[in-house]
Structure formats: C-alpha cells, structure tokens
Length: 237
Image (cartoon, rainbow, N blue to C red; front, side, top):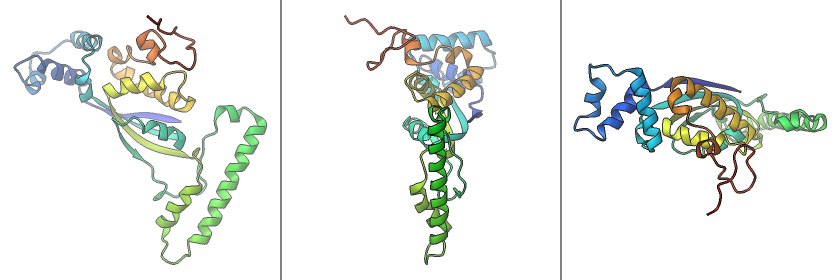
C-alpha cells in the first residue's frame, strides 16, 4: 500500500482565513487575501483553531488535498468512493490489461497457513480462467481488446489491486477521518485513512491535530453495536 500526497491548495491558512474573514467584513476575500500587511503564522493558526472550536467549518472547504493511492484493493476503493464530497480518478480495468493482476491478501488469511493456501489457489484459478477466456474471446468477430477486457472484468476478484487519485476538501477530510479512523472501520481503509491523516497533519497540524475518530473528537463513543475500548458511551439522560 502506498499513499502519496501529491498536491494541496497553496497558502491554505491564508485561503481559509480570507474566506472566514469575508463572512464578517465589508471587504472581499480577494482584498483580504491580497493585503500587504503580513499576518503572523501564530495568528493564522490560532484563527483556524478558533474556527474549528466554533464549528464554523465552511471556510475549510476552500482548501483541498489530492492523494495518489496504490496497491489497495477494489474492496477498499468501493468503501472510499462512498464519501461523495470528493473527486476520484481510478485505474480502468477496461483500458488497462489485468493479465497477472496483483492482489491484496487480508491479514487474517495471510497469517493462517491453510487459509492462505486456499486463497492463493483461488487467485491462481481466476488468473488461469482469465487467460483462457481472453484467448477464446480475442479472435471473436467484432470484439477488440477493450471489449474483451470489459467483459473479463466480471471474473476479477474484489481483492485485485488498483490505483486511484482522490481529492477531498479539508472539511470532508475531517469527516472522513472521523469515520475511517474508527476501530470499527475495516483494516484496509483505516490504514489508508491513517496515512492520509499523517500527511494532512504535516501541512495543517493546528487543524488536523483536533481531528480523528468520532470517539476522540466527541470524547465518547457514539456507536451502538460494540463497546469502544477507548471511550465510554454517552450517558443516557
């Protein structure tokens, strides 16, 4: 698994500051952003913390982060794209050949010798079937390589590795981390979220140091199904 932060909004603190200030000013965000008088880094960071404490989060939507993710499964990306306030560009299984596709082995299977053997045999069987079907279909009238690939996708396992580019704004990232850093999130997307979280904290530590799983932010566990090992449930009134 690889998680790379490849881009983010330039001068993110100043962008958030200008957007928030405009809400309470007769001046435009452009004028505030372009002010020659330099605002200290300390003041900007304190201002951002203040916005989060007040719950004034719309200004954070103007700062986005773009990540390139590699070596994760289609299971993981199916969970990822459920976060709708984001932009995604995923490697195609139609235009990219999936011959000898790479795959992810879940830890519970990887550490169990018998389970791993069955898993690897199953993947080999799928690869062989993929190759055989491809050899049958490639000479069929009216079928080019793309049309063959688009139908061969149906037998590929969800554990197939994929690549995807993800762009989220800061407010959505705060929500994403609250959901996917939870111990109840599946291990793979939680690992992705953890790596994204670490990268975001390096850029805006004053913002993302206040983020995390829901229980960390709320100081109680809002989940009903299982007890949280970190925080108690909220007492019922």
